[in-house]
Image (cartoon, rainbow, N blue to C red; front, side, top):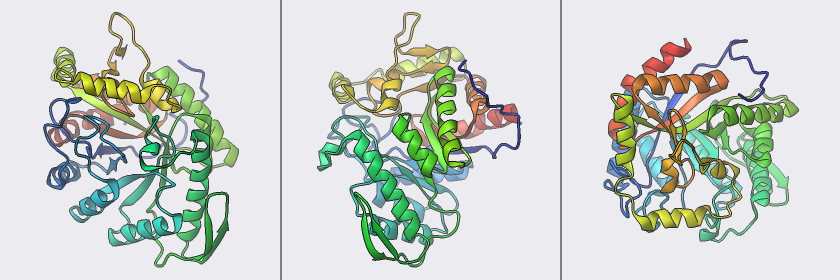
Length: 374
């Protein structure tokens, strides 16, 4: 275990928050096929979100993509912002954490869009800023800046939006953002539009220390996770801001350990070699530190088993987070509780197919997790 001075029993921990995921790439019992068994139609995504709301999750993450990242790149893909707007209108309580990429919408316009959506939904909107990305992702839509430049631009984007959300006129002169009396009225409701930021690079942690209400991390084995959180706490300490951490992970839950691993094998049993080759091409030479960590090789004869209950086989066909906790409900709850003890207070979970597994995880895993950390 990495050396850490964090004591999870010291002081008051924030209340555990659990979240689910909106599968904008498509869904089904199998992944990595050329097309999804369940295309990402609005009716299906609404079913997933309404199921998550009824199952008691606090929020859902809706990612952002420029091409399908789980099936063939030309497979149907739901656009993030318009889909999120519809899903919020189709729900009553649950929040949406909407992933956004600075640089594609002018900050003044985006600040208005986000404030309006938050106001129209009773403040049920938060934002996950995504400055990084795999090779070729930003370039698809004409953004050719470097990894470092995108983080610098994200800082100005967050700064300018935060100032506009006070409701006062804003003049701003930065390297990438210029505003002349920009004003957002009405401002967003208090408690909405919190900044979430993911990443493991020094740039990401520095930006999180400056702005993030929650730093998100993709699941890794406990030792590198502890080391990452140590680095993150140091970044937050520089600005005197309280750190809060969340973890994004897939789950493969079975009735038993053997059943769970059989389900993991079946999940990829119909994967296309074309999709696998496309993903490997996308990952080659990536500057994304977190993506590299998802590709770490395992041991004991299985290159994708990176722990007794950790499996990154999903990284063969999926961009971004490609690791899952695999096991029985008790084993999965034990693993999540271990990450809670490291400092994770929020868990963004997913499993295939998302509609059915949202109910199963809420019924069989989360109560066990809450028992373990209580």
